[in-house]
Image (cartoon, rainbow, N blue to C red; front, side, top):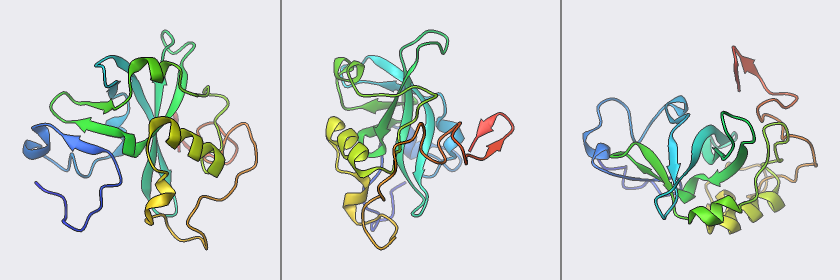
Length: 178
């Protein structure tokens, strides 16, 4: 199955035999919940964490970050990392993601904890994250929904960006925060 020829490559790449033989909607269109808990490996084949959240640029509906939990033990001491979606490759054969960065670099990556999310729409924060992982900002490819500008709005410093899990203004359904 091939993507539509006019579809630009702005998200995670897809590799593996599962991309051609998958039954059901995946791997080109998937429910975000199916990615929760997927393992992430570094370029040097080390397991570096698991996907915990998928972050959308709401105005365009595009995935812009995968939030990965790394380190810790039984959820204690976990460090959360925002990985640019375009920095990931979905490996359908091994049912995991691969980040094209060595494990040591990931270990030293800037992160945050579950109670102090960054303002992910902040241009300065986003630029630093994308530069760290060697990817262009999601707002740079011209596909960002129009808001009068082609860049994310500046966000005030806050303990969590609006809509981030656990922040004021997030919508909760059951035990899942939306």
